[in-house]
Image (cartoon, rainbow, N blue to C red; front, side):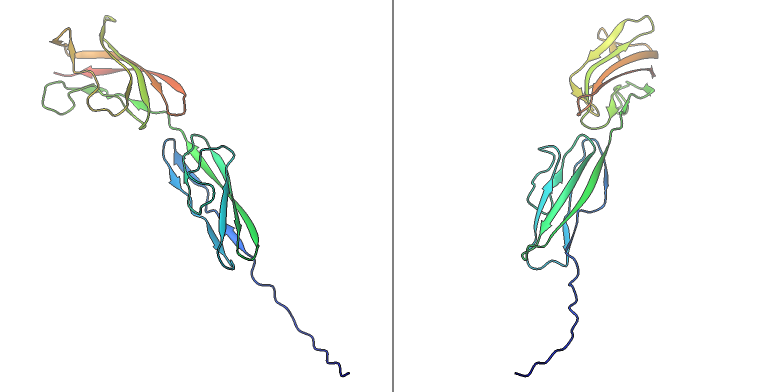
Length: 194
């Protein structure tokens, strides 16, 4: 019937923590791969990502999904280890939407394979629905559409009615469609140099 009493201190193990990573900035059209991490886990960890919109993650039950979003979005990471310990974390992917379409201020259509066409440049994925070039009398000298920016084979070659156009200033008009569905109109001028 002897009784022995002794005091002892039970120390809690470190808390189970999941980390979704730092917030990320992306340019519209780019993708990024997320990377879930866990610390102080016991055994295997199951990761589940929650997205406010379906289809913006390549997978929801994996540690490293790829993000493909057209708008700024926040994701929640849920993790559970083999002992049932749970933790969550959040991260936000900020989508920058530069609305850039650029036409050179001059070009030299002299068949030297350098700067021979008046091209439209901009953010990859941007579609040009209309590209028109006018001479100083307002006459339409070139028109095209339905192509993506930065296409080296689409642009005005400096001819009008199958003849070389004269040197001078020409006006251009562009209608652009971005990958998120927004449209924008651009106007400007360029100099044809012979």
